[in-house]
Amino acid sequence: MVMNREEDIKKMKYHLYNSGSYKMLEKNPISKITRLVKKAIKETNLDDKLKKCLTPNSEISPRIYGAPKIIKINVPFGAPTYELVKYVTSTLSPIVVKTNSFIKDSSQYVEFIK
Image (cartoon, rainbow, N blue to C red; front, side, top):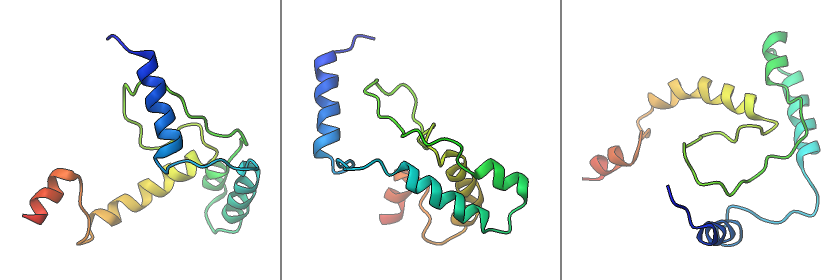
C-alpha cells in the first residue's frame, strides 16, 4: 500500500480543525472526569468485582493518531473510561435492538425510508 504523507497530514488537520469533533481546551479534563466516574461507580449497588473492573485506573488522556485506518474501532481504546463504555454498551445493546426506532446500519435505514 502506497501512502501520501502530505495528504494524510492534510486530512488530519482538516479533521482536527474543521470537522467540529474537537476543540482546544484550556485545561486537561481527565482528572475531573476520572474523579466523577469513580464517585458515581462507588455509589452504585454493583458488586465489588464489577466496580473494580469499571473504575478508571489511569488518568492518561486518550491520544489521536494520524495513522491510516486499517481496522475500525468503535471505542477509543486506552481512554480512562474504556471499560465503563464497554460495559454500558454490552448492557444496553440487547435492549436497544428491541426498540422500534433501532436501525442497525445504513442499509437498513435505506430500506426503512423506501
